[in-house]
Image: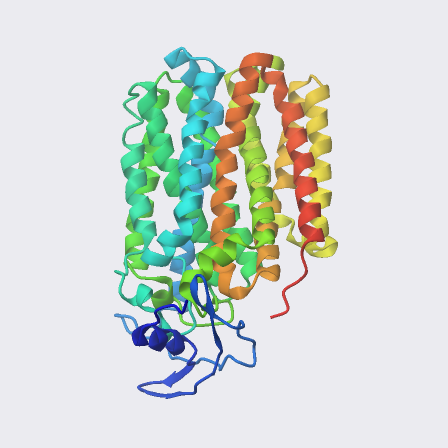
Length: 486
């Protein structure tokens, strides 16, 4: 039976196939013919566009209110600073639980399983954010970068230009405001859930936005995740001090203040605009798909996307599990006192350093081979932490583990840019980042569950097992991947 195709639908579909070259107010168009096929789902294009089909698009960037281009060096710097602040708070939040976990247990008089509900509720928030990331960012902004302002479908032009990042920042302020009064434990869990949801979306948006900016995407991604590491390194230093004062919950006033700063900076820098309004077309911009509604389906049908997402989830889970539980491990099994909280800071400090200084080694080894080398080094050092009962040796080994793990996440994002089609690259990076954040809550919870039954000594074999799983996932990904040729 023939589908009911309206003239307006055909007009909109064919308008996407008409590349536009515009200089000033004049434009010339050329029509590219395609064959439409009928399917049970309605209309789909007979073939995907090739480089010969696409006419170059050149458009002068619209001047901003102060008369300078939105992509001026100053403007691009402000964009990056705003995203760095978001990632700093995300690292700060992920590293908070480690030094405070024993204090929270004592305050609420709860065991490992109950205190791990913080990770469960956070995992639920992250998972929800991963599911809704692509449709929400496509609808509200910060997630769609197209090469032509005049060829958006109606779904883009009819929705309000209200980037989702500002809404997430506002919700974070709301969530953090309920933790300092030390309300009953379920309230704290609910706050963690909301923080997890907003951070899953913001993490995806920051990765997408930075990858869409002009310039060296690899170094920009490394710098972005370096600021995550800076936040994660700083949080244990402050949390350890505040946790010893007897007013542990007051630490979250700093998180609240950082969330307020991010909200203000996002409103000032992004001005409630979409990506395509902030950054004009350039070589890193995502190509617009011919049928916008097919983007989510195309992402989910890509085996490489799911493999990268699984790797990111295990990696982030291992990273946050080490930072979150190493303090408890050292206190109970290595005789470390309250100052053991600084070891968590050393781990995240190594993570940060690795993201800033190991790029020459990554290039020398090759990004894909470097993943194997770093995982093997980290696993060997975790074996030392497991088998050598010495506090100082363990602390040094944990810091070097952070150094080895540091470059992995930026490398994964850069490899994704090499192998995935450009027209789904931004959405795919967002999906991988969101699913990855689920691991930051899921695996620390599983650790707490096992620690309740078997003791906290399960931490090291669990971490080594996660490293082994990462090796397998990366190998499967490499066997199912070839470099993009478009």
